[in-house]
Image (cartoon, rainbow, N blue to C red):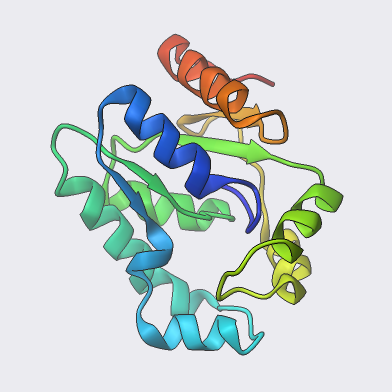
Length: 160
């Protein structure tokens, strides 16, 4: 989990390979209306996000052996929504400095323009100690981020 540009897709895909689990990018689960809205530079609101988060939860539930899903899950209420449908979900928050997020977003082709980064950061509520998950720094090289995420998940503790 984390804002756009935090490396969710790359870290998620590499973590899934490491754990021998399927990988799903939640961006691919958005309905076309959500994608069009973001592509036009308009932030999603809860009305847009909640049905999408239900699909994310259902995707997790449909993978009884487990799966890795790259999903922004920016706010606690969004993570709570996922947990309602997939109570065994565990989150990995990727923490990346804002300047690096902006650099990454400017360097890639994606439907979400970098102009939406500020709205994502305003929405972001960091993982809290009572939530199931771990926090890792997302700006080291990919292999180091994946190593840290897998190690933290295996220990069942946060890297705070």
